[in-house]
Length: 334
Image (tube, rainbow, N blue to C red; front, top):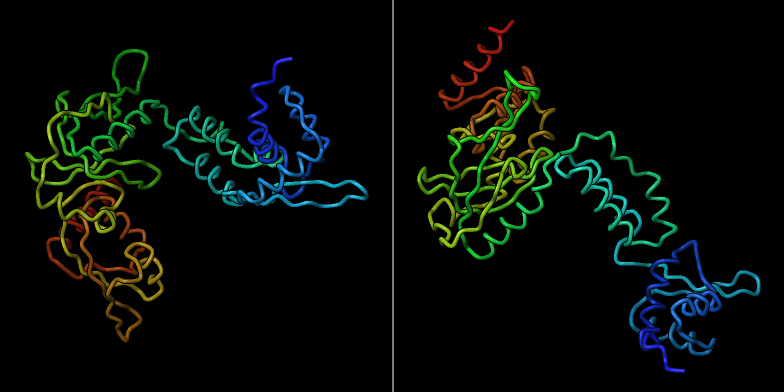
């Protein structure tokens, strides 16, 4: 009888068996391993299995032996990811609006393979994605791949950018339309970043000589161009950490240095937004002032308004005037 070619893979199958079938709470016997290998036509003796387990231990697998009465059980008790870390990954996927329902299920199934089948079943019972608000654009994942390829190869990208619009005719009342007069954008991609449950591309527009951001799920038909990426001061000195502190909700506006006066109770809010490295000036009346580079936008003004009389724009005067105009427009609606 010819030897089974899978015999050479015996050790790999044993490793696979430990990863799929065992964990802190579930162990297997040597007989279980022999039966599993037999299913692949691999013949194994008890002594060779003990040697294989020692070999896997030497390789770095944390396989432990426990006794239940007279029965010896072997189990893989530690992995690359702990069960708590896997739960965090699954929570991140299922709570993300950016990831479509179909892709969420695919990713969660893959994440579940990082643990044993028994623990994966427990995780699966906790997964609920059907009623979450999810993006419907399956092109997102190809977009991300194209953008990353362009960044790594220092190439420009071109694409159509879309927005939702109300349709006055036809069966569909909400439609996607192309911006920029239907023309393709040609830009230098700089970075991808996550903000307020959405994924954004930050890119350099040479014609306007400025950085702009675009929601990846609203981009269509991305192409990596042969044209080399532009080099400019805005690109070369770009700092993602600084940029995301300046931008509120990824809506652009004039970037200015704004001085703000906060009630002391809002120090946590300021640290969360600008980090604990921000310079503040305490005052004796229970307030403090701080300065930061921000983009003046409705989102920034809305953020300020949420704190009521506990925050005030001190300077510049132009920012005070824009905030007043924003408040007047809102007041006029009522």
